[in-house]
Image 1 (cartoon, rainbow, N blue to C red):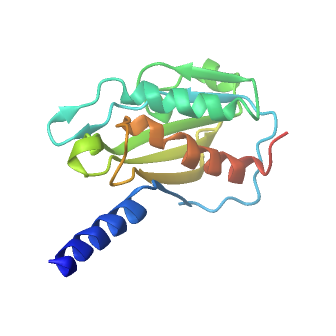
Image 2: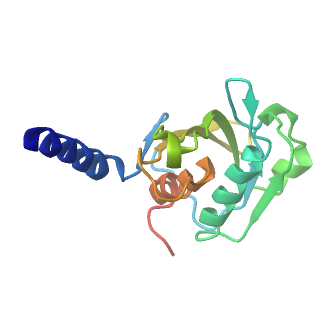
Length: 177
């Protein structure tokens, strides 16, 4: 009986210590030629809302832009947003003339799994394509986030955005001003 209690305790302890941290990752998809973007003007395009299965998360596109804007403000104040999803070809020439770089995110995975009681982590995957004002793709980043398996308070997938976006922008800009 004592061995069974010890085994249950050991399994519970292993789950608590291994499942209580979220993990993040970002990777460069295109390697730029030492391009840094200090004090540049940015145009952000709101992505199509994310989905998981048949569930559409109606504010997820806005949440991506909101998190990106908040982190981008550490580097520049010249940030404009297009509130609807468009491609680089659909951006008006006069809008491109007023910007240096365009960031077009694409939500590739958005999963809200009620982790607090299901022990299934929330997950996100967002690709950020960065274009110059000549419509040329100059950078692409893919960020991933996964919540902990065990959380005391359930959060939304958007809580997984700031840390990998911050790492992505740090790589883009070098260091904070």
